[in-house]
Length: 232
Image (spheres, rainbow, N blue to C red):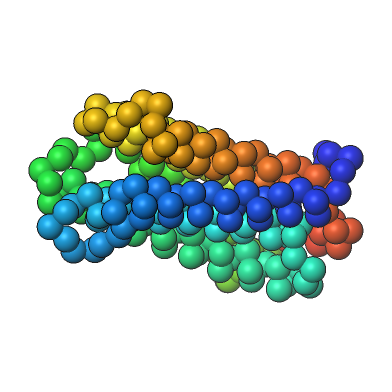
């Protein structure tokens, strides 16, 4: 059942929040944390890639992929392709983003997979990959029968939303974890960086909320005419 509002204005809010979240992460990573590096003597520059890639990938591009059926004025087949590609890029960025966290930990002697954030993160990226492979095989190639696609849609939708909600929730948990470490090493609890990180987490959370609102709102009529796929 869809909300009795049009998805279009909600998707505009999603786009605006996505740009805002990305800008805030960049300001934090570059202005406060010193920028990015793949190889560096200052290993924190390697870690800075982690929040940037995870937010850009799983959160922003993942969210845009989810609402592509509601936000793009294209034919259904074109929107399906955009949906597939955006999710693939999001998954790739997420994998690289997780690798940068392992790389930083390995090069600084920090243990891996000791926190709830890391456990949920591994679960999310695994489920995201399974969801993408399932969608590709059933809805794209070799493509399941009409009956299989019809039966798969509810599971694809529900699991897609579940994985995305977990990703957004885990992102906010990651902000909290990193800020806690920074504050224990001298960053002021009521300083500008702490406020920026908390505000970035709120914007990220709102982005996810409006993605969900967009999904359950009224989309183009053509979306209801093809039962071969859905908007997750």
